Amino acid sequence: MSIEAIGALGAASSLSASGALSSASLSAASPLAEAARGEALSGAPRADFMDALGAGLSRADGSLRHADAQLRALSAGQDVPIHDVMIAMEQARLDLTLVVEVRNRLVESYQEMMRMQL
Image 1 (cartoon, one colour):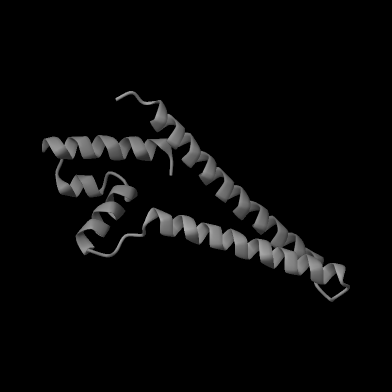
Image 2 (cartoon, helix red, strand yellow):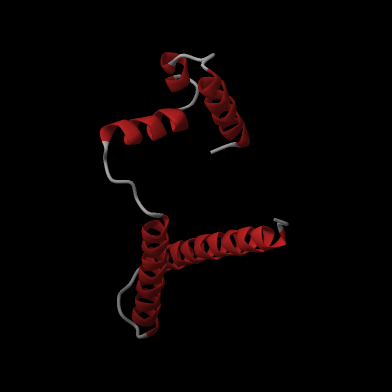
């Protein structure tokens, strides 16, 4: 998602609130706006942020365990292709990096909120 898409969504929602934008042109404003409007209309359960965060942590843990098992099998002399081990290790690294970045953004957001004056 790019900054332009967020800006377009914000502009579309502010125009829609003032009544200057029809619902047809709002849905054409961005795919994100259409998806959000579709979820609200369909009544489908939305994923909770904590559920998504938990799923990300579970995925990172699973990929780390898989990479560790692959590496142990390779070091034990089993017939494991080295490229599979390298791919598993890189996937684990990427998943862990994603989790760390989400954590960093959460901490930044919390610190920013604590600096706000009421």
